[in-house]
Amino acid sequence: MKAAKPIIWNGIIREFQEFLPKVKDDNVVTLREGNTPLIEAVNMEGIFESGLKIFLKYEGLNPTGSFKDRGMTMAVSKAKEDGSHAIICASTGNTSAAAAAYAARGGLRAYVLIPEGKIALGKLSQAMMHGATVIQIQGNFDDALAIVKEVSKTYPVTLVNSINPYRIEGQKTAAFEICNQLGFAPTYHFLPVGNAGNITAYWKGYKEFKEKGIIKTLPKMMGFEAEGAAPIVMGRPVKNPETVASAIRIGNPSSWEAAVKARDESGGAIDMVSDDEIIYAYKLLAREGVFCEPASAASLAGVIKIHKKGIFKNGDMIVCTLTGHGLKDPDTAIKSSEKPVTVPPDLEKVVKVLGFKP
Ligand code: AN7
Image 1: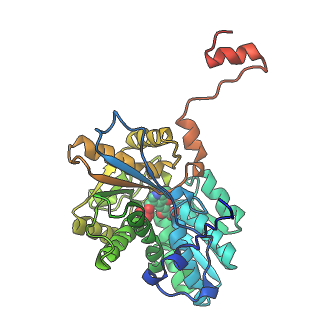
Image 2: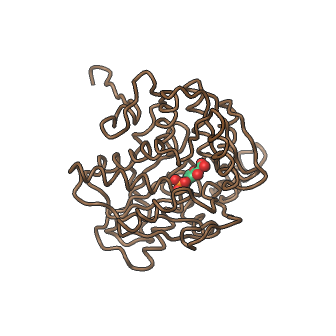
Image 3: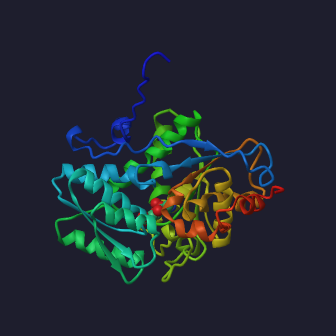
């Protein structure tokens, strides 16, 4: 290489402008989100027969560590364009982190409502560090969402939960990237389901690429809720949702109907996985060198569950969205791992722990 080679990615609004609502360039609030890697799983022999290809869309590599950045750049840019000075959201953590960061970037105020004691440490630190006003609700996400909806109706603040249609618009760009990365759409697309915005967004993205003739086939959309927070699977809201995957601890999703539509139109499924299955998949992903948060692993847990039913065919292409970075939730990572060994600063003792002969 004789000269520096420019590698420039301008963020999803500028890169995918022909597919997104127009934003005046001065109003674009971006941290150059998107362009996340699609990583093939290579250490899963023994779990799946060969011939099954699994790709991981590692959304934890977005600027704030989750897929929420795609929707947030769009929602905050539009809020700015509309003259809004403040945004508000309810969140299980990642939305609040993204809202806080993009609001800071764009010079808007952010107000975030979170369930007290139920969001992962990394996410809380992000919202606080970016200067959002953080309000802990003595209740769950669903309680918080009901309140922010009311507040945004009455007061001069823009709601940036995924009820805001710009969020879905931004998030659909992950489907575009997967098609561009593979050269076609996968056979199956697995992802965790919480408030159900992301499955809705991906399906919209795939359909738009098909309408434009960029892809020929559509994937089956496979959404996975956590067993203790599975309103769509149960067919009714869950009053007190509970799961180790705190990001998807949601009992009454906003995009419920749209998610069911994505499932039915695509010939996919919305199913659930237990906390044990989630943690098992979380550790398998770590063995790939890919660190995601527990909720993200619901996608791979779903693949394992469906694989056991013998539904996959040789050559099927599977994409799992890993929605958030593992560093978001260090507590669960430490709880799920072998403890470090402590020894004095002594060569022999260290060598012994390493299993070598002294
Ligand atoms: C890592 O941050 O709802 O089904 O308030 O953080 O589109 O809600 C987070 C959701 C999956 C579920 N994985 O996506 C919030 C929030 C991670 C998440 C989901 C979330 P949706």
